Amino acid sequence: MSSTLYGVPDDFDVIVIGGGPAGATTAGLLAKSGRRVLVLDRERHPRYHIGESLIPAVMRPMAELGLTELMDNRGFERKYGGSLVWGNNKIPWNFSFIKGGPYQYAYHTRRADFDALVLNRARQLGAHVMEEVVVKDATQDENGRVTGVRYQLRGSEEVREARASLVVDASGQARLLSRKFSEVTWHEELRNVAVWTYFDNTERLPGDEWTNILIEGLEEGWFWAIPIEKDNMSVGYVTRTERAGATDQSLQELFNSERERTTRLKHLLRNARQASAFRTARDWSYTTHQFHGDGWVLVGDSAAFVDPLFSTGVALATLAGSTLAKIIDKIIDHPAIEKEALGRYAENYRAFFDEIRTFVEKFYDQTKHKEFYYGLAQELVDPEKKNEPSADFVTLISGLSGRHPMFHINLDDLIEKSSLSPAGS
Ligand SMILES: Cc1cc2nc3c(=O)[nH]c(=O)nc-3n(C[C@H](O)[C@H](O)[C@H](O)COP(=O)(O)OP(=O)(O)OC[C@H]3O[C@@H](n4cnc5c(N)ncnc54)[C@H](O)[C@@H]3O)c2cc1C
Image 1: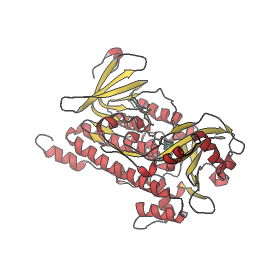
Image 2 (image 1 turned 90 degrees about the vertical axis):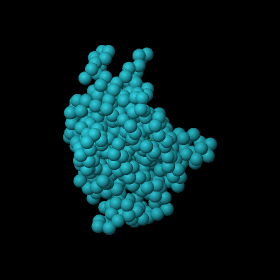
Image 3 (image 1 turned 45 degrees about the horizontal axis):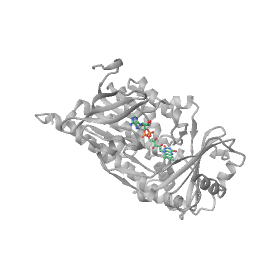
Image 4 (image 1 turned 90 degrees about the horizontal axis):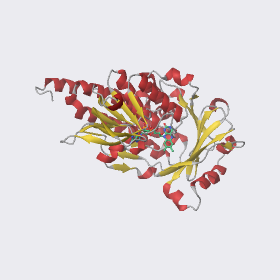
């Protein structure tokens, strides 16, 4: 490995742009396999990020990274299920992850702490992590193949280059390479905005619901309430972009007036104090057309984003990161399979994403009874009706519990084909 200024190496197997959950998981697992990995993040962790409620599917990549015990030790709040005020049920209804698969709980986290934990693990596993470094662009050879990145340290004028066999874009909604190389489809059904803040001195849901996320639907939107610490909650309101634009109220005013119309949430907040300023995001869902190209590949939000209704973002990002790490590990040993192997990754990742998105879109119809939503889940994940529909619902919103082909992509046929080819290609 060659060295440049200040001893920072400039030649790697893989460069990962972005050290969020997607990038840190991909990088950590590649480093664990002995690969030379560079991670570049424009922020210094811990850094703020929205998305505090995790689903059980995230436990699988966390186990691969050796982080499950640490998540308890760090005091992250275990999450055993959810409570819903949704659809035309007269009374609120609950789900418990215990019904849904191998992992019976997930966590609520402060994302700054969770993301720093995963990135630090990547570092411990041997990834070279640089923070406060902005990636400006990809470098390409005369054939257009991506060969590395140009990056700049915060506060410095100097632009440096690093090279790698493959560049992974895990830059989240910044979509650095995804913007450069591909169009995107915006999912019209999910053109939403979110406004959220944090409260102290909140109440908890009663009894078995104590650790649940609360999702409370209203006519024109819905609230999340995520218990992060003992009496601190993340509370957010999501509504259609066009509806937010059609009222005279600001998003903050809308949050406060809609909050007054809730039932369970209002109760949880009856003695609460708002503990931080409001934040907003245009959380439109999208899928990038091309997940990979010559020398580059996308993972996490840079590939696709789905509305936060079922808290799937971090699970999708880390599961895809785990799958991608295994695929890249094989590509490094068998470069001739790159295009087809990444194609297989893209196809399966897209299908996994679409399954969840389709369900979220249909779930937004709040005119139905819970049995209808259970039935929808069964159609998607258990068409042969082997399990109870309510169990299929939990399986789906747990992140499919490892059943999806995305978790078991086999490349043996490609490797065999490439070894039989005289040119190795
Ligand atoms: C309103 C809202 C609520 C949500 N709620 C949840 C939830 O409850 N649960 C859940 O699981 N998900 C939730 N999500 C989604 C979740 O936050 C994301 O899906 C998740 O963070 C994706 O991880 P990532 O690693 O792909 O991207 P990120 O976490 O965004 O990480 C990308 C990283 O790339 C870095 N970066 C960007 N550009 C550059 C550059 N040019 N150079 C260097 N570094 C760069 C950034 O600094 C960042 O650290 C929510 C999203 C929204 C909008």
